[in-house]
Length: 309
Picture 1 (cartoon, helix red, strand yellow):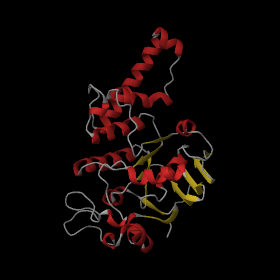
Picture 2 (picture 1 turned 30 degrees about the horizontal axis):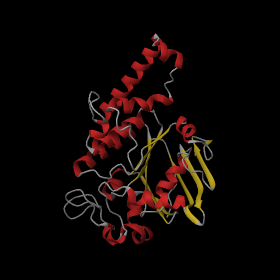
Picture 3 (picture 1 turned 90 degrees about the horizontal axis):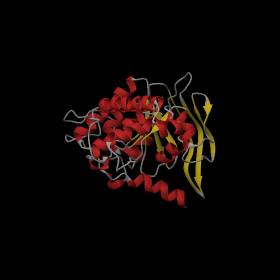
Picture 4 (picture 1 turned 120 degrees about the horizontal axis):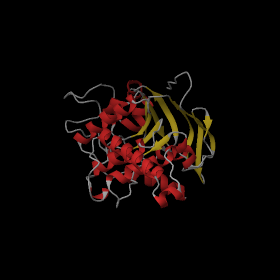
């Protein structure tokens, strides 16, 4: 089952392959993302989701296939060149500057479009001061957007984990992206924080930014996504609306499990895949869909170990 949109795509992944030795981490993946569209990529741990993200953003060099951003082939580009074309991402593991305060972490996101000259910085010229003020104003704007105060003192690593997640999203937004890739942003969040994340993702989309989301929380995925792409052992097994994917036999067998099919809500009125406390309806003892509380290691480490093979 596959559902494709017509028209020009912001992101077009075509027959993407990534192999580490004899292991195929990504095996013929193809999907598109259009402007202001939310597409989730789901699948069991080690299915190739983060490897695909790393290819799209230039951290991995694809074995074959093509990746285009707004018609430009970025398959062989470095991460900085991909980012310069309007792509920003977050990571499974936080990549913040732990010893810097919140404001400086988000200011760092402006460097792609706000250039400083060494001469101006050394002499603190008026142009340097203007540029610094622009960066500060931009950081204030995005911190307010994600619901955080910019005047928080102390290192960012001292913040609660959920707030650090939002700082990372604010920094990504400070790059002014057209395409935002979020790698398991709900990992380690409690129920209330997940609801805030759901609202935040929707508000980002309202800005016209396209979002690609890797996530194990099926309640969040089915609630926020317009399309869902499902991977298993590096292969795409489904691409369609949340309702189509939820009912796809191959997806149920590989990932969701029979408990996830086919109802829209659980008996207590919660979205499918959610229990009353916001957790998953099915735990991960059999490798099926489940939330991981803070342990975002499994899929990433599986793929990283593959990379070292």
